[in-house]
Each structure stands twice: as structure tokens, then as C-alpha cells.
Image (cartoon, rainbow, N blue to C red; front, side, top):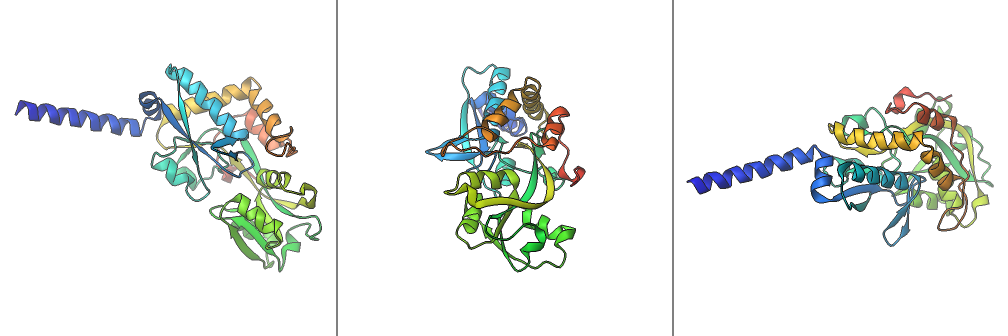
Length: 299
């Protein structure tokens, strides 16, 4: 009987520990010596070079955050497991514990805040229109009767349809499975325009065979704060992530990282994206916050 009670107590203790770690990412990381970083394969803020190598502004920033957390926990080594995510699965993978920290290109909005938490904003995105220079498209009005591409699981075309300047403009929507696929729809002529985050548009155009064949045109459709995503109700982990980002902002290393990935030649084609930090991004760095996009205005 005593053995049975002892076994039951051990099982209960183990279950309690596992439950505690489910809501305590720092404890989970310290116990396992590993962490899962959610990354993107074809985003303007992070992408793959193949063979399991992931790079980009948000990817490298996430790695620095995890290095700071490793120091905080006193771990001699931290194994980072890179988990590719898509627009469709990124939130479920954070919720179910597959991904501990997602540093892709996720917009912080009020709806998503019901399911996940966000670190302080590190990039403020402008949703734009990319088209071929020969298309004759110069703004929303020129999309009438055209085919517009966007990526499954994103809100860009819905944002376009809600724009007052798009009232009465009828266009066909086609979906790419990821950003590279959406750009291919434009590149191959199956779409006349690609509506998405400006950084994603600029990155895909810069990596194409003929970057000069593309241009971003027209009005800013929406202004969206982009931030790393983590599980809800884990204040200690959120504080650790936020503290690292604030440190990177304060010592100037985040600005240098931005310059590296947006204003300098980058792999694999060794070309520049050429997208200076916007005034809105600089304002977010000057006053770190986790406000959702509903608190931003298009000017």
C-alpha cells in the first residue's frame, strides 16, 4: 500500500511539474536545455537559405533574445530548434507548445491577442501593392478587373477590400500557399498585382531574376505592428523576451541589425532590399510597446 501511495505521489508530482512548465516557458527551457524558435521560409523579416539554415532580421533578433535568456538561466548551452511556420499554422503551433517563440512576420492585432501574447513591437509594416513596372497599375483604382494575389492565412486582401478607396472596384483574388508562391503568381503573369506587407514584397522582388521589373505602387493600405509571438499567460517569459528586445534597442544593436538586413547586400543573391526603417518603426523603438494594430492609424 505504501509503495502504491509513493508511486501515486511521484506520478502526481511529475504531472504537476509538467503542468507548471506548460505555463512557464523559462522552466521548460531550463529543464530541457532547448528551445523552439518559429521562423519563416519566405518572409521579408526571415527566410531560408536551404539545408536548415534560417536568416533575416527577425530570425537573428530572435536568436539574440534566446542568447540573452540562456545567460539569464545560467545555461552553459542552449539548443535552438528551428521550426518553420506558415501564416496558417503559426498561432496553433505556439498555442500547443511546438513553438516557444515565433519571430516571423506576424501582425499584433486584437483578435490574435485573444489566443497568444506578443512581445514589444520591433517592426511597423505598411501593406502595399507590388506589380510589374509594365502593368500600368499605379494604385487601387487600377486594380479594377485585375487579378490580385495574396497569401493564404493573411489579411491583406481583406484589408484592401475594406479600404474606402476600393469601393466599387471589382477584382479577382488568387491565393499562394506561402509568400514565395504568391510572388510566383505575379512573376508568371497569373496575377497582375501582389498585395502584402511591404517588407515581404521588397524582399521577394529583390531576390527575383529581374528586380527592376517590379515596383511598389499606390496607397498604404494599412499600418501593422509586427512582433514576436509567445504563449499567453506566461509573464516571466514575456518579460525576458521584452527585456532583451529593449536592451537591443537601447544599445543600438537592433538598428544595426536592421541596417544589415535591409540596407546592405544579403544572401543568397547578395542584393539590397533597400527599405529604410520607417518613421513608425523608429517611433516603436523609441517607445517600446505591445499595442495592437487597431491602435494605429493610416496617415
